Image (cartoon, rainbow, N blue to C red; front, side, top):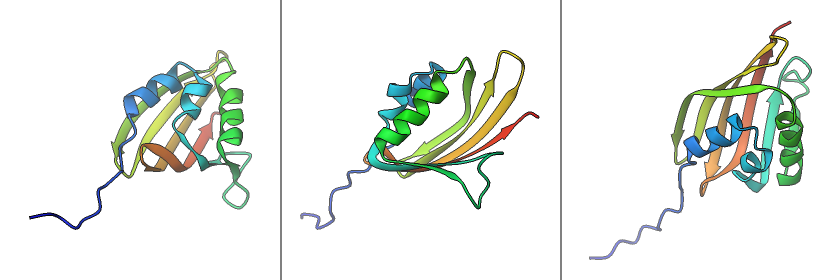
Length: 125
């Protein structure tokens, strides 16, 4: 008996490899996880829900991560969960002057690549 169901091509993102790239501040390594037409939406003190920062496409996303990863900031990924459809984690960041940032992110994936991601960041004053 043969099945008429279409084969599934969905694959979960290797969250441990993504964590390694983030914590190593490897901009190209992080960007490699995104689909060419992905969208990354950032909400923070400068970009409220009415005017979020939206980075569309791999070039814009890579440029964002080159800026973030080029800073002297410690990144630690915690509370990560992943399924074939997406992932979520918290990212705890600290600057040398003691300023802390907490980011909570959720993403939708397809075929092992990030298609859309929303990150909410909270900064120390």
